[in-house]
Length: 490
Ligand code: ACM
Image (cartoon, rainbow, N blue to C red; front, side):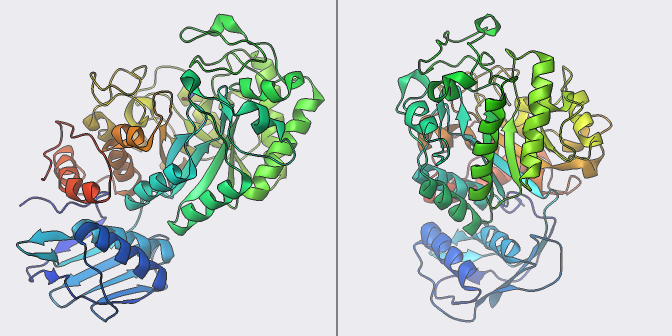
């Protein structure tokens, strides 16, 4: 028998021999938020408008781990109980994946599922700097992530190509630093109202926003607004991409050439302003300050900057977060969360820096680039995407890695979770996002959620279950590529 099309695979599932529950006319009662999400999902999938009634009961009950739920389906009814609102929401998502056609009817198979996440942090990142993505696109991506039980939206809000969040303390950042994007594509920025709308929308789907202002490198756009804060571009580090010119908007894709002025006190006034304001706008615990690829910043200057920037964020009462390079800095603020973006089989000092972060009490988010960088081409002939992380990344490669095996000597409890970044050098629209993120985002979700030793945690089961989700994704408007690795249900 084919496995049920559930991704991520639940922790425990029992399929009973009972008849399935017919959905037509089934009434919903209980938690109003969960009921609204379920009605929307069922309507999108089936066209049915489920009435009020006692057939499907949705409730939050005390007990059980955070984000856990139980889903019971029998021939006469459905009951979903969540240990909290997020757990109940995830039970609703699971129910949505179970709905299937049976002749003329829509039905739900009789099952009992007890489910809870492996990792607390299950993220996606969207780069809105290389190409700007408007609020509607971000909401659509939040919906996609939430449907796979992902719970963090990391927004890469600044880079050489643009600064994408309006700040009252530093209005020139967006007035002068947001007008364009890669290849001269239209720029853009979020007003504070836009950003709050994103945060609220994400929260309504149980995602926490982790905003990032990348520093001290990746800051050419800061120099458009505040020339006195920026060093001249260091062009001899550029191996690929066009050459930047100080004071002119950068529309190329080179990295590593820009730096803030590390020895100037005005730089730290700037850091305090931008993260202070970001802190007020952001309810979540983490503020990401980047720290990657500062190739044009001398190591001792990088260390000085990282120590001060991380301390400024910690003083705001937030947990600093940074890419793993920050682990090279002995005076990194204790407790800073590190984000590993090396390869599944490390090739450089990245594991050393990541372990150093954990030794200072920080936990680690794993984003191995050759597995879950969603901006890598899924196949060599894909028109979108990059190839620097070991060539094209197949769905199988996105799936076939184990978080606890990436960094030798890193204890499992030091791993906060897993995040799949989507850098947007080649990604301009929601259709582009779908074409690269799907179906590999499902691999990231399963690695982040499902127990490592589950019976369905195999490539064969996963590719079959992903194939079974094709009809649901189609009805939700997701334009996923029909990769040949997957036996798609049509
Ligand atoms: C990165 O990919 N530069 C974090």
